[in-house]
Amino acid sequence: MINSVTTSIIRRPDARNGRPAGLSLVDLVLTITIIGILSAVAMPRFSTAIEAQRVKAAAKRIKADLELASRYARSNNLTETITFNTGDHSYSFSSYKDINHQSEVYTIWLNDTPYETTIQTLTMDGNSIAFNAYGIPDRGLTITVINGSLTKTITLEEVTGRVVIQD
Image 1: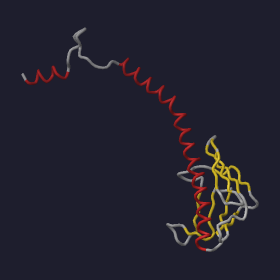
Image 2 (image 1 turned 135 degrees about the horizontal axis):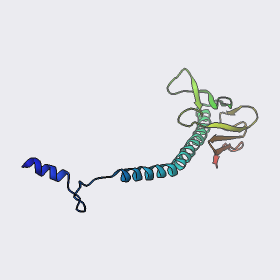
Image 3 (image 1 turned 90 degrees about the vertical axis):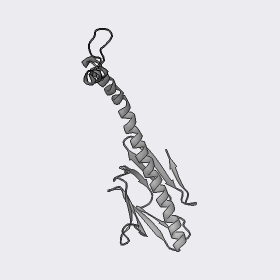
Image 4 (image 1 turned 45 degrees about the vertical axis):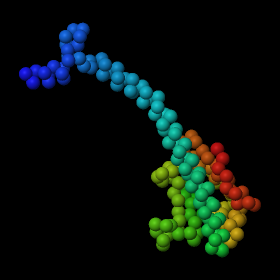
């Protein structure tokens, strides 16, 4: 008796035709089609959001590192130089050490995770910028980073040393 009660609870008959209620093949196909359409619409927006986040993070990193070089030079009363390499989309400090590898200088590869961006343009005389013992840069700098179709431009003002991120 318990077995028939359990079975009737699990497989309730449909009130219309007496067959067990459930999903038909048409219901499943329709549901999967709707999910597919929604995914196709959302995917481009999602990938654009990822590109925007990566290029924004790379720009913020460059800004923070330019400010770090200025503070480091000022606090240690020395000249700190950042050298940009547009070939492998990286930059490195001259004397500031990598926190994880004290024997190596601090180097950032922009085309690596998490940024996955590239240096599109680098506008300055040469490929290095030096901050004197007062934290003042020896020249101005404009660098543009790109990920997909999105770009950010970072500008270092020569006179003030102020760093600005522009869209």
